Image (cartoon, rainbow, N blue to C red; front, side, top):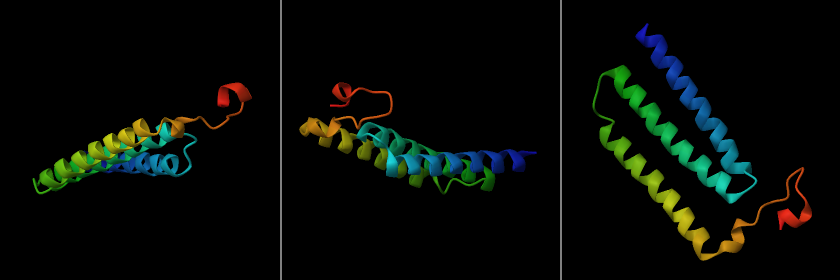
Length: 103
């Protein structure tokens, strides 16, 4: 029973990571990409937690901490970059928005 739960959890986290990577690559706005990047980092840490529980080991604790820190620092770096140049926050025109809103 435990094995099937671990495999299902790992598969769902892997699927979330893949879908978030797609959003990182084709996200319509920078904010979407930042949130997707954060989701990828959190999903990878979650997969490491699941593997650590499944293998009954504590080897991944340091790696999980480093990955969590890198995800946080990456998000903060994106936000600082956008804060220095707010013109990068312009929204790309989407279906259903007027041209005035898209600018």
